[in-house]
Length: 140
Picture 1 (cartoon, one colour):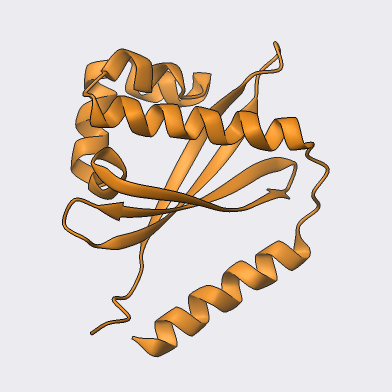
Picture 2 (picture 1 turned 45 degrees about the horizontal axis):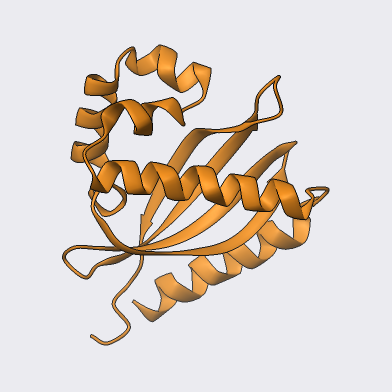
């Protein structure tokens, strides 16, 4: 377990060191607001609101809020029903902002959700993907 945690921390540190920032404080606030509102929408079972924060390409894949919510319920339970969320690093990788969010699910399991963001033509931000990594229980 300890080796997994060390590898994960090293990966995040190396990634952050290789990243170009270039995001303003208002970008950071806007990105976090979008992610937080989607998390709130998941907790409220508001599929329309949650789906509205997905990028056009993600919306194209899932086609409807109902299909999107089913996927999130099945594959992203810690995000779908987060008891707590804490924002970590925001970096730019290959031109796309990537926001780390540490989530704790209803079951107490902690995960790292890594959100890839996409700026829209109107300047707003949408979520273009999320990778979920289970974090080891350090109390075990």
